Length: 348
Ligand code: ADP
Ligand code: MG
Image (cartoon, rainbow, N blue to C red; front, side, top):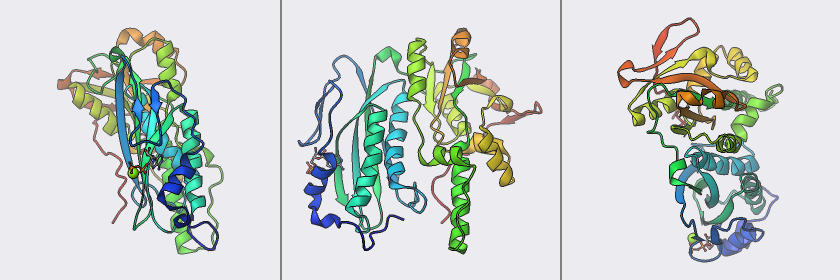
């Protein structure tokens, strides 16, 4: 735990302005669209003839993350990754982020530096400028809000509302891994709480742990779609689970869908974790949250082009709204999809 114990520098020794200066002193701006970054009352951006895409997320300790098993560096990385993921989900390119934090007394300067190490690393990997934010104190725990800003040509934007009948439904990577990782971490936390002498057993689960603790936004898929000149007719990033997120597309696009269970990509480690917990792995891939994979539709005539894109799978197709929203199981049974969105609020 990153408790403010005997070691570590009290943030009060720097004060708010000192802390902001300290955290932002090494920022080097990368983009021409960033005219002014940190240091004035507001950042100044110049997007000329592009559309500007803006998204925000708020993450609260105890609700969205648990510092018992989340390293602060990973948390910093994740809060940038999940925001730029929303920009990619618009088929846009992220360019700037702002980061606002509220910190309680138990966080030392070193702890916040660790958080910013992750933030800075993600800003490098996703090629975005950190252009501002806000810093304040909190009575209870850590709170982080990130805003990401990106650009796209108007005709490149992919909305949730653009899916048409017969479009192919595509998904990147594999699903359910982050949820499997969370189940493992929560299990080991319970073991630890009931007997602190027990060491957590996380061996053989590296992949699902990484998917939970350090998720990546699919920058690579955005780039491959650009290279292939494919503009998805609709797109969303999977944050609540495939089931809810395909339903968002169907509802916004006023269409139905048919998804094939056997086509949904699931990693071996996710299978293994589901088995260990006596659960059906399809529950993970359909209803697990925080995959941050891209779910999108393309017209049927793009079939060959999509098949050439590595790490993208076709899992079904869009139907007329009157046909409803269905999952076809491995046994050929049609089940109506349900929005069992992943609920990040822990049991009270
Ligand atoms: P104001 O009083 O106008 O809110 P601040 O003193 O909060 O200004 O912020 C000064 C500058 O530092 C601003 O450019 C702001 O965007 C930036 N900033 C504040 N907190 C952070 C942070 N946590 N991360 C990055 N930039 C920050
Ligand atoms: Mg401020």
